[in-house]
Amino acid sequence: MNELAVLSKAMMMERKDIALSIVGGFIAGIAGVVLFSASGYLISQTVFAPPLYTLIVLTALVKLLGLLRAASRYGERLYSHRATFSILSRLRSSYFSRLIPVMPGLLNKKRSGDLLSRIVGDVESLQHYFLRVAYPPIMVIMVFLTTVLMTSLFSVWMAGLFVLGMLVAAFVVPGIVLIGQRRIFGRVRQQRAAVSMEVTEVLYGFRDLKVYGQLQERERQLKQASDVLTAEQQRAAVHLLRGQSMHAFATLFISWGVLALGAYLVAEGELAGVFLAMLVMASLTLFEETAAMATLPAYKEASEHAANRLAESVPSAEEQVLHPSGLLSDDEAVSAELSGVSFRYEGEWRPALNDVTLTLPPGSKTAVVGPSGSGKSTIVELLLKLRLPTDGELRLNDTPVRELDESSVWRSARVVLQQGHFFRGTVRDNLLLDGDSHTDEELSAVLAQVQLHSMKLTDAVYEKGENLSDGEKQRLAVARACLRKGRLWLLDEPTSSMDYVTEQRVLKHLHEQAAEDTLLLISHRLTGLEDMDQIVVMDQGRIVERGTYAELMQRQGIFYEMKQIERQLVSP
Ligand SMILES: Nc1ncnc2c1ncn2[C@@H]1O[C@H](COP(=O)(O)OP(=O)(O)OP(=O)(O)O)[C@@H](O)[C@H]1O
Image (cartoon, rainbow, N blue to C red; front, side, top):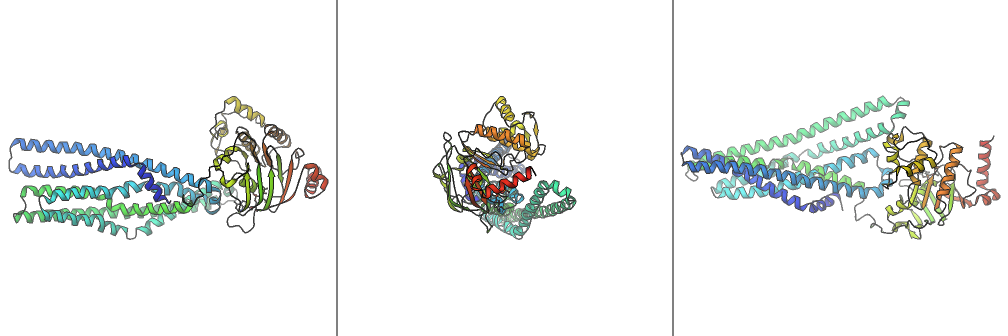
């Protein structure tokens, strides 16, 4: 299902508000046409000095129509905007729910700035679809047909001219506006994506750009891209205004035509003169209602393009594997089994994991060691179902991971990744990330357990944890994991930036808390691994050695050599 199909579905769900807004818009449109026609008729009638009650009735009717028009226009705006915002929120949730599962792979292909531009700009563009694309033709057709029907009661010729005018206003003018529009709006979109990319690059790389003396140059490029975007947006706005002016000119021209034809029909005795002003006023008001048709092609094109861009960044609902329903139980420690698992990142020729077979029995403690780039973190990503194996099978609690609901996997896992993310807010906000409720006493106790005794829950945390040291960030990430309920601990170098004493205390606490759970620890240091049930040594995506600490030391293989090197480095 692409975004336009999602949009249509969302519109169906808001059908009550949409129906009410159509009724409101129709009443407002017809009330406007009748109001101005009645005013024209009233002015013409006064020339014949009619009885006072005629004028009183007409004046009262005009006032009543004025009130009706205002009230129904208000209702139309209220319901149509309410429907629009509900549709927008449905679109956002639908887009995000399809985006999240493919996010890790997507960031490999798209720059985050481009993705941001899609999430914000394109989803936002779709909000115009109902108000500016789907709604105006319905309204115009309803108001127009009713007016033509009423006009034909006075003169068929005049009704014919109205039809001609409508063809010009609804097809010819929008057709002309369409010429060149794709190019102009395409450039705006392209440039908007370019600016988003520049902004994210400058924001993410601010410090490095500054230190390497490149900041000014990047700022200059950003300003340049922003200036080009402004110029393109101006061009697009001028294009839209040109369309609107063309529409105003064409409809005014048609009203002059109505006046000329009316005068001719009056002179020929085919139309009573008292109706002339009424028909001219009706045409002026009717064509005012069609103004939205002039900008319709622009919004239609923008919405369709946005829908395509969104559809291209996430697989459609049909393409996605049916949402698996398997759940991991929180009551028992999780078991994991990788059988001949290989994994290759998209676009890479070399597999990050190559025929890996590994079992993590429930409640076991496993350490994974090995040189940088050997595939250790990739195992964690697969266990978290952030990515699926290219080959082989991965089972959690004896269920193939493909059949498990991702949220259930994430709920069962306590994760500390190498680069944990911290949000702007307080320490408390960052601890309560998963929405679980914990008392302040519990939170403070966990902070103490991870050796953050001096940190207060109200302490500020800057964006990306800028005001915390790397070791503090790691301890806060460990605290976050400790507060969760899952029975599978996945710790990717959780203590690499801590001093030796703190590291030992934090690891001791982790072992105590995870005593009954399954734990996988990726470690760059080879100390403190004596109590592990198994140690797995990886190199170039393969498991090259495995066993307990004692077994590996006795075998005097790769682990033993690594240990000797570490010992020499620590005490030369
Ligand atoms: N997002 C990615 N896209 C493409 N290749 C990747 C990606 N992430 C990792 N790789 C590659 O996959 C291989 C394994 O990476 P992985 O992060 O699993 O290694 P690691 O053993 O955890 O390394 P380190 O100890 O440095 O964290 C590396 O060659 C790396 O370049």
